[in-house]
Image (tube, rainbow, N blue to C red; front, side, top):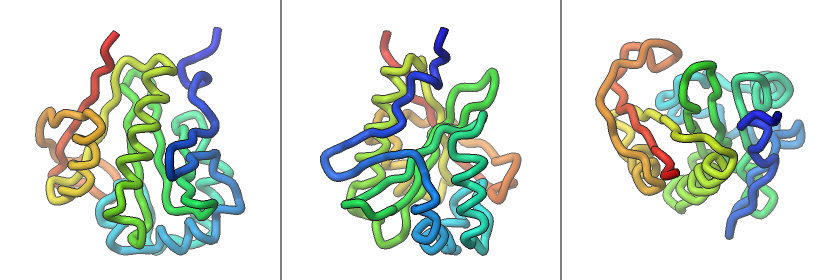
Length: 175
């Protein structure tokens, strides 16, 4: 029997974007865009500085590893960011994402998140979780636009956000 993860699509197409399996061809743009202190400061698992060796490791070992199902977000064939589901045993999948700064404020994160949420629902997940720094109003807004509700404040316990206040969010799928 196929697992829910096995039912997630390798590629998703929206009106403006293609979400696809991260490849080595994305590494140069990924490294350039991810090597940003502004992005690092709001993500719990992105090293800084970020170089091509980090991007290669992500593509080769993490993006479609046992605990991740990630997509590269492409705009007219150009890599602009990553979105994925963090899949830990006995926990709801966690939606996470980042976009390169030149692509902020254009609705790309919302468009990609809507597509991933729809794919997760079709695959059979019953709910998703996410979190964002209390100070990251833009990310919390993206998550609210795609149906997440804020479930409470918490202190992040691990990663680069350890000790910082985050808003826990959840999206229940109707059955």
